[in-house]
Structures are given as C-alpha cells and as structure tokens.
Amino acid sequence: MFGDIPGQAPAKAFFERVLRDGTLSHAYLLTGPEGLAKTAFARELGAALVSGCGNCGACPECERARRGVHPDLHVLEREGDVWRIEQVKAIVGDLSLKPFSAARRVWVIPEIEYMNRESANKFLKSLEEPPSYVVFLLVTDRLERVLPTIRSRCQVVEFRPLSDTEVASHLLERCDVSPSAAEALARLSLGSVEKAARMAADAAGPGRREEYLKYAAAVVAGARPQDGPAPADAFIDVLTREQAEVAAEVQTDLEARLAELERQFQDKKDLKWYVEQAEERAKRETRRRQRVAAQDALDLLVSWVRDLWVVASGASDVLWNSDHRDALVEGVVATPEHYARLLGVAARTRKDLYLTIDQKLAFQALFARFEEVSTSA
Ligand SMILES: [Zn+2]
Image 1 (cartoon, helix red, strand yellow):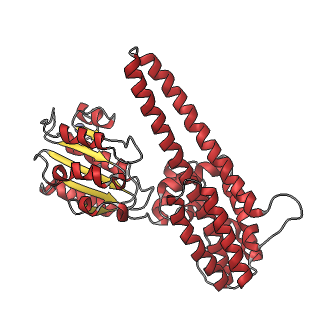
Image 2: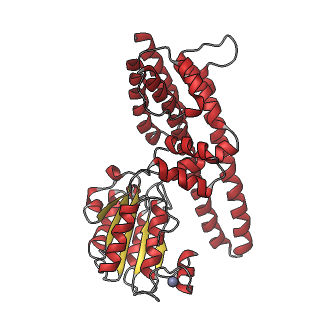
Image 3: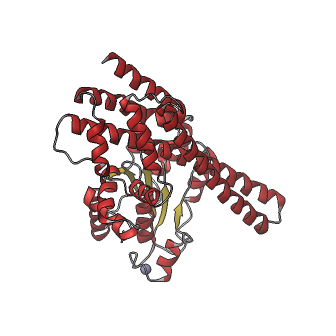
C-alpha cells in the first residue's frame, strides 16, 4: 500500500496500524501544504478499504479501484467555485445505499476548505453519524480555512514537507535529472515533490527558472537598464507568458474533451450538461495552475533573496541556488538586515496570491514595496 506516495512515513504507519488493529474511524481529514500527494494518498487508502484483499494490487477488485471504476469508492471533484449544495445533497442521498461489493463505501473529498456554511449544514449530520459502512477521507491544503464544524468531526492526519533527501531520491527515480541537479531542486522545492517535479520538467524544457532568477537578481540589485523594460516588468512578463501557456494547454485539453463528448452523446440535453461541466472544470483548472505558476515564481524570487541574505550574513547555510554561487556572491550589495526585510515583505505576498485573481497586481505591489524598503534604507 502507498507504494506510489513519496515520504509521509508517519501517515502511512498510522493507517497501517489502524487497518491492522481494526480501529478505523468514519472520517479523516488529511492536511498539509500543497504538493504532498495527499489526494493520491486518499485514493490509495480508499482502494485498500474497498478491496477485500487490502490492496494487493493484483486482483480485479484492486484493478477496478485503481482505474476509478469501483462502485464503492467515490473520488469526488468540486463542480463550482465552492462545493455546491446540489453536490452535497447528492452525496447525502447516496449514503443509505449499502456497499455493492465491498464491506465499505468510501468518499474521497478534496479541497474541503471550499465547503461553505450552507453546504456544510447539509453535510454535517452525515459526517457525524454516517451509516456504519461509510468512510469519509477529506483533504485540504489549508486547514485554517476549513469550517470548524467540519474539522471537529474528523480525525486530523497531518502530512509534512519531505526532507531534501527524500525529494532528491524521488526525483532521481522518476525524472531525468543528474544527482547534483536533484539535490539543488530538492532544496528549492521546500519539501513538495510536485513542485520539485515541475522544476525538473522546467530544467529540461523552457528554462524559466533562469529567466525568473535573472530578473529577480536585477530587481533586488535595483538595476535600471537604459533601454528595455524595467526588471520588475520583465519578471512579471515571464509570469504572464507562463500563465498564457497554461491557459492554452488547458484549452487544448478542453477541446479534445468536447470532441469526445460530441461523439459520446446524441441527446442534446445530456450533451449540454456535460459540456458545461467540462468548461467550468477547465476554468477552475486554469485558475489553479496559473496561481501555482505565480507561487512558484514568488518562491524563486524568495530563494534568491534568501541566498543573498545567507551570503551577506556570512552564514554557512547551504545555498538553495547553489548552481549560481558566483552571481550571488557578486550580487550582495546590502546588509543582511536589508535582505531580511525584503523576505518579510515577500512573505506577505504569498497570502495575497491566494486571495487575488490577478497575480500580476500582487507582484506589482510587491515590487513597489521592495522599492520603498530600498529607498528608506
Ligand atoms: Zn487486490
């Protein structure tokens, strides 16, 4: 079990013990930062719970659970900006059905922080006292945003960022990277395997990290080129281009999906419903991936300032951007306190990226505050 999930030894051990001792509870809330494969974990656990074999991985039960077609394993996906009340009513209405082939019925519900009070009110009683065969596996990246009424009815299981060694060995196993690149990317990933894998793909592809770092370095140094755009604008341009590419990729997937639906459904009314669902989903996916791109860009900017701080303060910490040591040593023009102040400013932007739809504005505000800090020094 959990063979595909990197790290998370405590969570794995916890559920293995629960299954062995037969002390399964009816609701768990898996929580921890983005990019730790929590939903994949919930899916695996769900498969183990509905397959009589305990997820041997080889029998027809396991095969069905893995392909997402086991009738007793429901992996849900949010259909609106929040969990819509119709969707919640459908879950609640479905609970009274006994398992079709397993001993249990399992619901995996990701992004539970998007369940608002109105939807939660429909859900709470079922979450508190579901039929004996029901297990809920709720997932969130942001525990602080989950309604307390939901949180208090679940057993919370925490996922932790992976160690650099764990991320590096995962990269070496799954991606085409050299050992030294794996080490550097692991440090930059802040313990998220998904982020590390994105950066490994970038290193082999568009090379955006280099572009972001180049302009980040110029912004922090206060460079003002005679011609061409200001470094802050150039940085934001890289992000704008990346976000446009993301939107185009999602659009291509959507068009393929729509063509498939056209073939599948002759009934116009059915077709319309599925088309709307697919379009809504594409919109959400675009927004999510654009936000992730902005967060990755911010993390790179922060990694650069953090490394400047390390060099400026003469600390012996390992550089995150160890492949740019010379540029960092040359780039130090201010005191460690100055870089620490910039890090404080950047930390606030991280939260803004969640709240805004236009991440460009968040970066413009950030760079303006960078300038204030620099001129007041
Ligand atoms: Zn099996």
